Image (spheres, rainbow, N blue to C red):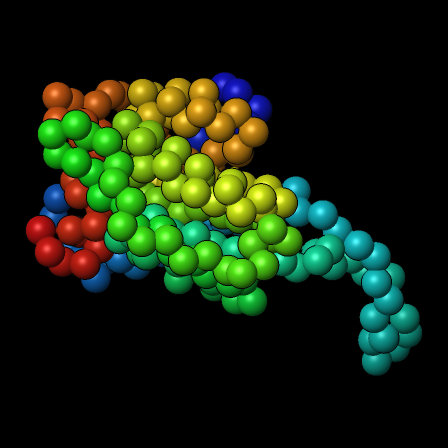
Length: 210
C-alpha cells in the first residue's frame, strides 16, 4: 500500500465498522458509530503534525514539554454525509475551524456538482482535513480538494470510513500529495456507482432519511 494511504486494521475500528454496516443498526447508533470511528481515524491522521518545545510550570518544577506548532487546523466536511464526522473530529481538536463544501452527484453522469463552498478566511495558514464517509468513484473528493487547493492551504488530508479501489486510485492520481485515511476498503463499485458491500447511503443513515 502507498505510504500516503492508510487503511486501518485496528480491532476497535473494525469492530465498530462491522456494526455500522449492519442494515439493522438504527439512526442513533449509526450516527454515534460514525463519530466514534472518526475520532479513532483522526487520532492517527494527526500523528505527524509539527511540534514545538515549550516550558510549563507544574506545582513542583518546570517541565520541558511539546505542543502542536501553530495549532491551525480546519475540518471541511463534504455535505451532507460529511457532517456526521465533524463532531468526532472536533472532540479531539475542539479549537479547529470548520468549513463546508456542498456537492451532489449527478445520477446520470455520476459526476459531482458544486452548490456550496464556505471555507475559513485564513485557510492558507491551516492544515485541512476533508471529511466524507464514502470514497466511491472519487469524484466528490477530488472536486472538494480542488476547491480547497485554490485557497492554498498548508496541507490537505482526506478522511473517510469506506472506500472502493476505483475511488482510491482516482483520488491518488488526481491528488498524489494528499494523505488518505480510511477505516476499510471494499471490493468494488456496482453499476450505479455504489460501494459493495458498503453500508448503504451514509447521508440517509446518518440523518434518518432512508
